[in-house]
Length: 104
Image (cartoon, rainbow, N blue to C red):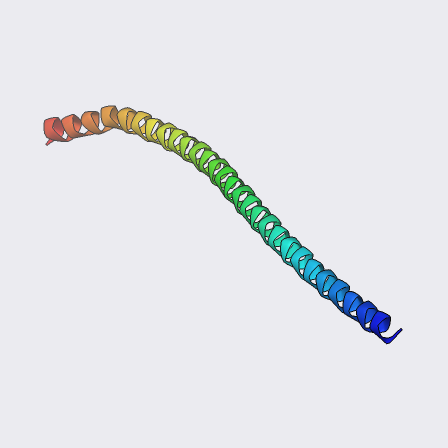
């Protein structure tokens, strides 16, 4: 009976060692899987962030370009108005100069 008890104890210890080894192996496998999944999640988040930055940059570039076009159009309109006013004043100025030269 003592032999059977020792044998049972040895078998139980061996079973416990195998179970412990299996649990450790499973934990390492899960850790590796979690690390891989984490890297994938980080990579995906970085890609999404880059895409969002590119989209925001494209929108801001488009907004800036539209504002620049509007500003250029306004400047052109003001330039045309000033030119027209100057041309109207040119005739008056020329007449005034001629009148002063003639009248002395």
